[in-house]
Length: 318
Image (tube, rainbow, N blue to C red; front, side):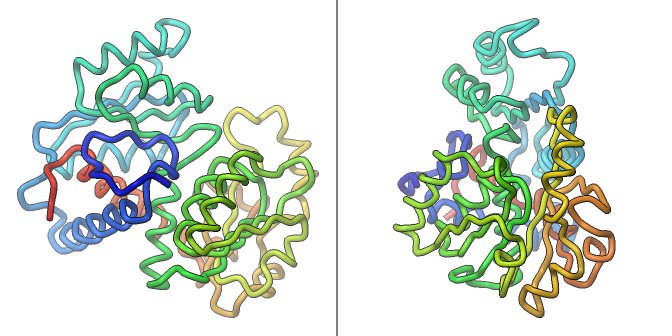
């Protein structure tokens, strides 16, 4: 991971752009902002007064849109939501969009398909660019998820997280961040749905330095055994609708249900980045059950992104 330089003015394209020290800095800022907001539903001396964030979304969103938009408002700034107004690469090139927004706003959040789009936006814009989701990574989701686990477990070193399902963008970011913080990150996925090989290589390199580990397998029962955390995601993501039936067949034995949960640690928690397809990747009794921390994850998207925005756009805090 990167060295521990100040975050002000920085891009976040991959979760591996942040050092462990920088992640801890974001988490510390998040804790302070969350505590203050929970007490008063306000922030004293909002740190982003007068700041403007462009939200360039090519994919629909509930959590990412609302948490960034509400977060900017709560921090004293303003967010502009752009969807059909901007068709990247069609109505206007990525370069031209970036260079225009660069003149108007203080930062850009992009939620798109190809990861190369956020890379080009960052290359062309002088203001910070934050990856709000690409096909390769979902760094803000990983930050919120790991912050949620930090609240639950304290130290994350040695905590076993078992991801059951597709080796997708969410898993990529979770693996990169989890192993850097000393977690054992596991994945059970059917043949043909393994994670990106370059991400796996990067995660294993980070794990060697950070004390974590990455384990890949195909048997969900074996992967969740004695795990403290079971994580799942939709079998069919946006843009994969044509593969839905094929994916349902491939993932049929990868459902997170009471039987699978019984194999994990007795007090294991269940996570899902949402939206959930009840009765497919997860059953309602597990999603709504006592071990579910899904809504904590969702809430922490707001708090972690505020911590991130405050560090990237706000004045330094000692």
